[in-house]
Amino acid sequence: MILCKNCGKQLMDNAEFCINCGQKVELQVNAEGNNEGAEMQNAQVQEQQMMNSNQMPEQQQMNYNQMPGQQQMYNNQMYNQQMPGYGYQVPTKKPLSPKAKKGIIAGIIAFFVVVVAVIATIIVVSGINKEKAIKAKTVDLSEYIKVSYSGYDGYGTATYSVDHEGLEKAFIKAQEKNSKAKETEKLYIASALTYMVSVELSKDDELANGDKIEVSIEISDDIYLETADIIAEKVEYSVEVKDLKEVTKINLFDYIEVTFDGIDGDVTATIKNTATDEFLSSVYFDYTSRWYLSVGDKVTVTIYDSEISNALEKGYAFTETSKDYVVSGVDYYTNDFDELSDDVVTQMNTKAEDIISEYFEDYSNIDASNIKLVGSYFLVNEEKSDWYYSQNYYYPVYSVDVTSSNGKFETTTIYCTVEIYSILNKTSGDVTFKNATTISGYTDLKSSAFYSVRGYNSLDEVLEKCVTERSGSLKLESKIGDVK
Image (cartoon, rainbow, N blue to C red; front, side):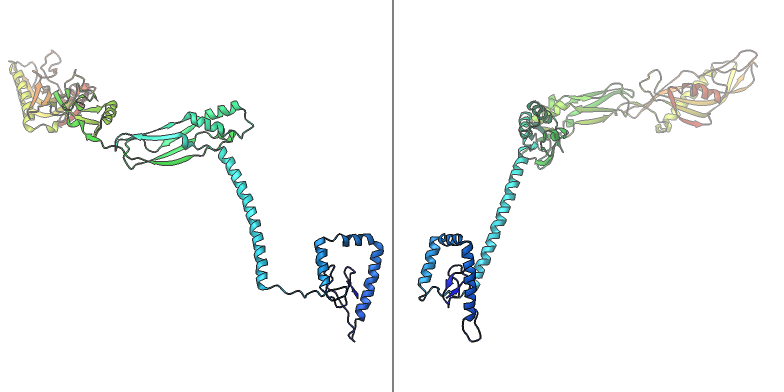
């Protein structure tokens, strides 16, 4: 008999494993092949067992008696299957097969997969809870802003509306987690935020099918958002314009007639709508002043905005809403001496010369000779509304030698001019003018005894009286010849 070195159980001599603890039995064999070593070992084990029995007999007995019934039955069956004696032969442990090893590895992997899945589930659940918390205090501004458009293709208009009531409720709900604020404060913040919503449309008029309206919505002041712990981020999106109806395009000015009557500076414009269509014939329009007009002035005719809107509602779109009409086709006063023909200038000069000659022919004791044209002045009236002056003036200047037949004064050269004014270009192509009936100014021919005739003593005096003294209202447009 031998004893188990681990637990002290008595075993048969040829036992390889302990039937009690399963420990492999170690045997010492001497050179002669006997079991002296084993017997010696058994003796030591028995001695140790006796010592253990003396120290804790009750505990050892209890441990043995407390062995589970199934395990004890299994041990008894194994014992009865052995040869007669107290021990039994324990089969040698075989190494694991590759298939078994793969199973173990698969089990380990499955274990870690489960662990990872559990961790992932925890992370996902945590993320979901966080997402729910963020969503609870987030307000989507676009849900409460409505962008709409209407009208006709190419003339559509876009507008937007704000659901203030719905938006206010959303802001109140978003503050439910904010326990720090009182209900009155939450209501005040929600109401204030509702009117801080800023909406911008990239285009809101002259819309056509296919156009994109870029919409931008944001809170203009985010201090209230931070205070209330509300998330209301800026929203940007686009709206495509479609399904606008076709419009009938028409140019009202095809039916507007503007005529001018009068003389340059005193022209009146007459405006008439000749349309026969019931709607078009009743369209109202505005215009700039149409009285006291001059050639080159503009009369601007503009359709009222209300009429433009009204037309679109009826399916009409005006291709033009304003048009300029330039005053023309009337008699006008010349303001550029160069545009006068040589024939017209000759006519004016001849008229002046005839008046000068006729004047001196009336003097029986004064002779006039060497009447020569030395130059001329041409002045224009820049203020055409100032009717105190004519619109233009022409002064042909002649040098004249005057001699007293009775010796009252010595032969003297004087300068005579006749005022010619209101030189008018008529629509017929003719040019008309008006003239004074006598010579301008007076001369001083003798200092000791006063004696004078009409005219000026020098060219300087002609310049002074005809040009310089009138420069406040008339502009010297041109100077010809040897005049000053």
